[in-house]
Image 1 (cartoon, rainbow, N blue to C red):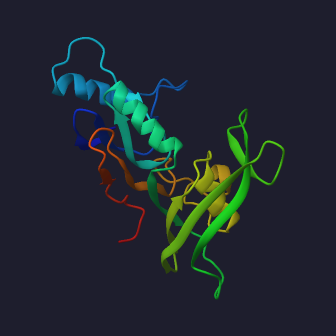
Image 2 (cartoon, rainbow, N blue to C red):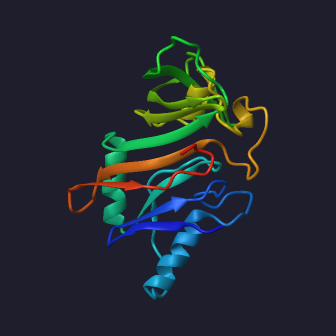
Length: 220
């Protein structure tokens, strides 16, 4: 699988992650985005030895979209601080075969308590002693006889937050077998894509916004 370079400078490498590629090496031993990005930097800049790239955030394996790596330790530290301070705007697009009832709101904010079962790698909604609050802004972009297209903005960063929120709203994402989809997508991806990412540049102190082209499953 190939990935697209969206931006590169002394402190950042921003890429478009393909669906179904892990960001970091895992037990599958499949090639990771981190490995490919390091190989690209090494070749592009003819760097000797080990290439440094700091992992600042992650996307679930079946999700495509914008990912930023830090090219320096200073960049990694400052980007991580931006994530911790919630000074990052993440926008996703999503697609579901489900449709909301006539007359129901077409935008709003989902708030729910989520608990992750680490052994099964699944997240459940409901307030428990270990649950964490998840907040998502959402709006319907379009509806047709085939389903619903959504724009999602997570205000918190909980595991599987958007997938669970959509499923609880009756809008199970395409191909998301883990949360109720009736069939996989051909490439085993799901109908969720990190379309844009905005954050303060670690040294310029200017806000930067990067976008990734919409996937084929999103109606034009």
